[in-house]
Length: 106
Image 1 (cartoon, rainbow, N blue to C red):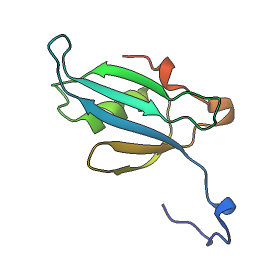
Image 2 (image 1 turned 45 degrees about the horizontal axis):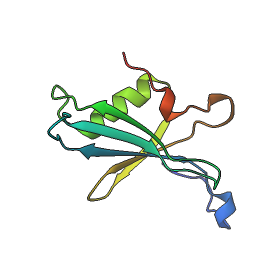
Image 3 (image 1 turned 30 degrees about the horizontal axis):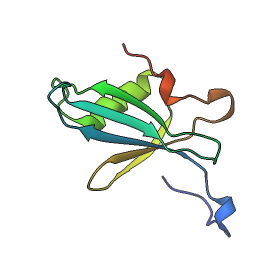
Image 4 (image 1 turned 90 degrees about the horizontal axis):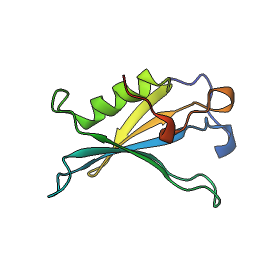
């Protein structure tokens, strides 16, 4: 994403929501799952999490989460990753404010 001007301070940068995606391996009582979460933004908030069954059809947790988020109206701007998870940055604020706990399946 190109910006037409350079930010003069941190408050001029765009503010995005962070959606993390991680893999939870199978246990004796549950199959493999994907965790989609949004860390709390304020002290009074709790981290929101939604666990979904791992899709062997997709075979890729990032793609599986991406499809689900897009289906639910999330405006994904970019992605990043680390050794344990993927992160999407989204700009659903205000009237378009969506919550992880309300994700619906196709």
